[in-house]
Image 1 (spheres, one colour):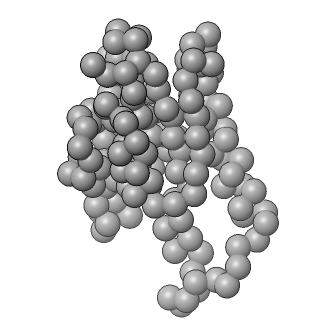
Image 2 (image 1 turned 135 degrees about the horizontal axis):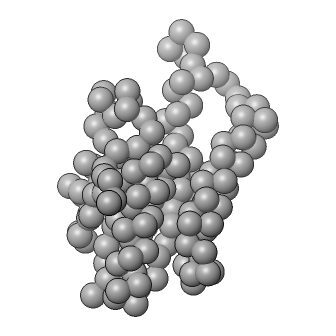
Length: 148
């Protein structure tokens, strides 16, 4: 039933709760998980000056975002313990909703994701990634808040 599970993670508590829920589902159904961290290119808007985008990003900024994404995926691996090596991990740059939808279209049976991420202010103005995903993909989406 749920053999190919996609779990986007952004480092928020909600996304780590989704890791726990998704891992339990994968174990129950013998599924494989693809963990995905998307470095949000829209975050570049926070580095604008007077409405104009800065012409270049420093290598330091790029390296920091990359390192942060790798740390998030490493946290996921540590949460899974011995089962960590049975799953896939991917870090990509792009628009989170778009990338998640594209990955889902590649044979995903279920998306398990946090109901909210780290960007509460941008979520208010732009709409949440989880909301967009739940309305655009052709597979079930489980939105996770808290796990008890």
